[in-house]
Length: 489
Image (cartoon, rainbow, N blue to C red; front, side, top):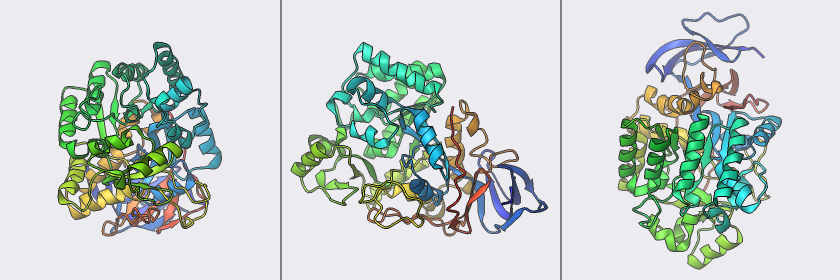
């Protein structure tokens, strides 16, 4: 296999400089070696990409797939780096070791899990670096409560050790413990600031949805950033803000203008996915989301919950099982406009919140490709990035191609660039940058995954290179390729 790949005649986009021009790209030994009018070296693999768009592969800050199957779906969505930062894993050493042993098509990395640290300290749940264990505790009142001073000190010490092991910051699922003492969140932010690592927060409820909340969820991020100086990332602003997104985005803008290091992400769907036992899915609270039990669909079975009684049964019997939450009507023009405004917001980046793929037999991974039938997940696992590009570039004309790559590649990489050497060469396309590249057919890019058929791969990725290796060539996946490398702070 040649270590050199030459892409000729493509429209090359570098989001860092905002440039877009027709030129050749020579990849050698995992980096971009030359740009311009390039003569093919002896033995190079030459691909004519005339009429196609070449840019840095997408960096997903919010992916929970943790599997070969899930990462292959994300590869067809243009992703070359898939990081679990909102929830994170614990212990990260085990997460990295298991991913390396199994092999990964895409680059991978994890934050330190605040939720997992609290489960260990408050409940005695031994962490095993799996998402299933993390989901299983979210509905437990013993996990949701505020910590004692001693418990807080112990969980902070555990997270500090995880940061020392290379965790990419701290993932904070605060929305699942909505009555938590705000002082605990500030303590975690101070730890992150002292370590020089970001936090990634699923915020607690907004004041519009819960007037009794200890503090407005998005305002809490803003205050903590101002008080501690931590770099703080606001996860999936579209799903936590819902119909109040304009107010939230305005507040985040004001915070940034005042010098706080607050970043924000969104995904282009009107439905989310989480464990059915989540605190905010308590039947008496659904009205705050302007939804009812019938807005919830169980991922594994496809069951649409018929009434409050059935919802209570599922929460009691299977609190860790995942469900779809329909929080906006994608067919309603007003709700669709809210989704677009989340994506249009200056410096908002795209992130998927990709969920694991599971099958009826309980399996969550496979090396078979195409994927076996019957796999269930949220369609954002397969379609987030090309759905956003289809909407914002092809249909709306709201983004240029450099802007699309800025939102999907450059800005996400910058969230980590200060503290993580492995991110310095990602999200850009210049001589010396990492050869994590996506080649797109600009007239064909679109998502195909739906809520009823969620594992249909997106289309439009003609070629995808990860660490200089062709993972997708002429639309076909190399099923023997596992070029993904660990991303550690």
